[in-house]
Amino acid sequence: MDRWIESVLFASRWLLAPLYLGLVVALLLPLAGFVHELYELISNLANATSHEIILGLLSLIDLSLIANLVLMVIFAGYENFVSKISVANHADRLEWMGEVDFGGLKLRLIASIVAISGIQLLRAFMSVSDYSDRDLMWSTVIHVVFVASGVLLALMDYLTEKAHNMPSGH
View 1 (tube, rainbow, N blue to C red):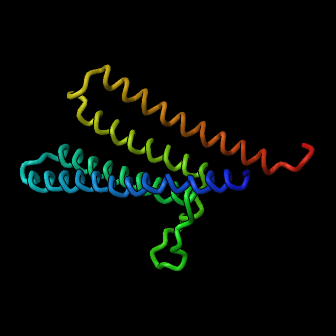
View 2 (view 1 turned 180 degrees about the vertical axis):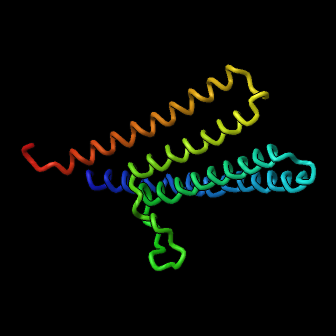
């Protein structure tokens, strides 16, 4: 009975595979947004101010960071929780594939979220007249919370790693 239950539990990891496939489809959303933003930026380039160009470029960077984040979750999540991706000999294999554990994924996710939040905050400050003081204050507070969360997660991982590497009896 134990072996059967354990086999079912182990096989249940495959229930995650459709979620990762759904995220692959979801990658089309930032791609569509990127193409739309790029088209808008190029078509309005003749009349655009440098301020508008910078904001357009920030939008493109933001969308690419979001797509990178989704791709990272797909690869690392699938490899950590479902199955190894068998592309070891492929010329385009990403260097970090198979090396990002759950702790590393958390840190990469929070770093990406901090970067995205920073771009959103920069965009808000570049168009400060379009935002209320309250909106700017909350955007700043949220960004600082993301940064602090990242620092605390990194510190927790560091302390956990240090505790695991300590010799017995200390």
